[in-house]
Length: 223
Image (tube, rainbow, N blue to C red; front, side, top):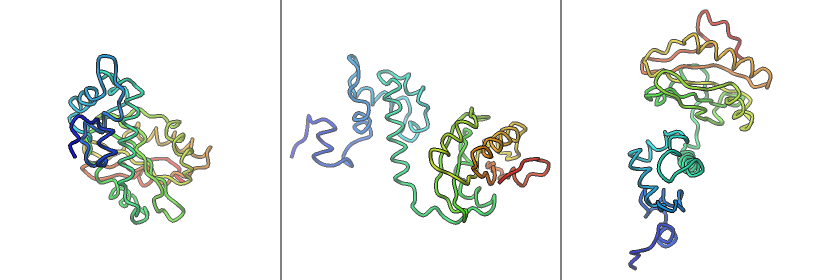
C-alpha cells in the first residue's frame, strides 16, 4: 500500500513506530509548530543543530528552547521522551552489590570518560544492590552547578534511603578538590536531617577513581 503523502502519525498507526525516521519521531513531539515553522521543520532544526539524537539528549532545556520554533514546553517534551527511551533500555539486572568504591567505579566506567562533569546518585538497598540511578545534573569540563536541595528533592521523591554519589573529573585526575570536599560535607549534613544514609562519594576519571570516604585527611562522617 502506498503511503506517500501521509504524516508521521498516520505512518506510525499504519506500519508501526519502527518505520519512522528520527525526524518523523521528533515531528510528533514538537507538533504543532508555529505559524511560520511547521513541526517537521522544527524537528529538522533540532537535529541539524545537535547533529544526532544522542547529542540532542545531552542538551539543556534552555539551549533547545532557544532554537527556532521550539520553546521551553517542546524542549522539555523532547528531553522527557529521550529519557524515557533511555530508561526502557536500562538492564533489569542491576549487577553485583556496590560493596567498595571500586565496584562503584566499575559501574560508572562510561561516566569516567565523558567530556563534561556530571553528578550521579545511585540508590541501594540494605544489601547494597542498586535500586535506582539518576544523573542529577550535568555541567561543563571543570564543574557543575548543583545544590544539596536539588539532590535530595530527587532522592526523597524516589524514596531512596541509602545512596552513593558519583561524579567525574574529565581532567583525568580523580583527586577530590577542596570544593568536592566542601560540597560533600553539605550533602552529608542535609542527609542526616532527612534520614538518608550517604555511603560514599566516588570520583571517577580516565586516570582512576577516588573515594571521599577512604580519603586520608577528609573529616567527613558517612553513613
